[in-house]
Amino acid sequence: MKKTVSVMDILGKKGKERIVMITSYDSTMTKIVDDADIDIILVGDSAGMVMAGLDTTLGITMDQMVYHTACVTRTRPRALVVGDMPFLSYQTGVSDAVANAGRFLKEGGAQAVKLEGGLRVIEQVKAIAKADIPVMGHLGLTPQSVHAFGGYKVQGRGDEAAKMLMDNALALEDAGVFSIVFECVPDAVAKEITDALSVPTIGIGAGPHCDGQVLVIQDLLGMSKEFKPKFVKRYAMLFDTIKEALDKYASEVREGAFPDDEHCFKE
Image 1 (cartoon, helix red, strand yellow):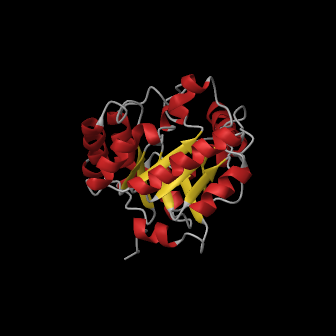
Image 2 (image 1 turned 135 degrees about the vertical axis):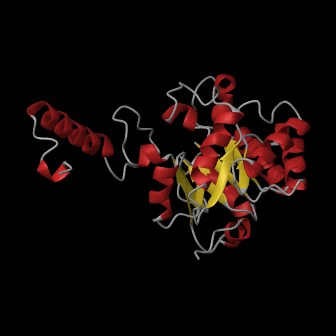
């Protein structure tokens, strides 16, 4: 029986081994991910964009996030599964935050949750952690705050902004998070904060000095020709591969080449 990755395993990697995190939202992709050496699967609220076609992450609901999380955990992956708490599932207060975090574990089968923000949601973080639900923090560019930020912009530039980021990170650590995602943060700032924390940091557009890295799986696999942020490295270009297969299928159907004898049942 395969040994699953635990929160304690992730904490133990700090300063010793880089942490690999990737998103997944369905059982088919998770089975492939599980065959690779991945430490954490994030069922991200990015599902609202890459799976549902929304323009931002704001529209995805708790019910939808629990559904995607359950699709992932039914495959019983080795990786630690983290459910991403969607917009307004925790900002409205401590009671809502704990109840919704609990749904990810009870209904979704996740082992932990992630939420965005630092000091402004610190009471929610403390309460969720006190309920024995492991919490991953998320600082820097927090997509649920896209309208407050005025767009998707790098965060933590300048001494004052960098200090604010550090203060928020230390507060999250004190509140009991087991790791923190840093998104779109200058690499030098991410390094300084990573060195100051005892919990692992996971970067996305935050340079090489974080304790781990995360990418959206559709971005990594090149499943869109249009969308390629600066911090994304495409390890494949599946858009072209899939389109080629579909074009071939369409052509063979129209020409009567498929199905052939190999794909037909006989009396």
